[in-house]
Image (cartoon, rainbow, N blue to C red; front, side, top):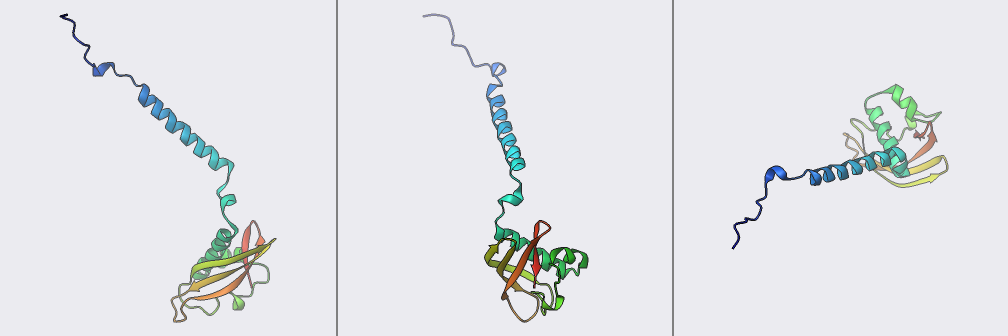
Length: 140
């Protein structure tokens, strides 16, 4: 028999290689995500229906807040307030859904369901949009 003992794992002799490897992989993934986000702006990944829904929701929000300046940027030329898609609704108006979006060049239509704090319940009507200033404008 020999008096040699098997070496005992010395915790002070462990290496940092696994930790460095893990940090490197995370760093590479993060760089990839950032580069991907920079090369493909978020607006380009949104569908036409998403953009129309955002325009309708922004229009309703500006109407609820009586923000005339914002409304002027969200509606097409010749917009008539009395023919607004939310005319006659009382209280806080909400966009509940936007369906059947049809885009034809710089014009679009969509069925928009709105609800308000009045007794009329949710109603659906076809809204008309025109593209202008890099966004969809609400028309009537």
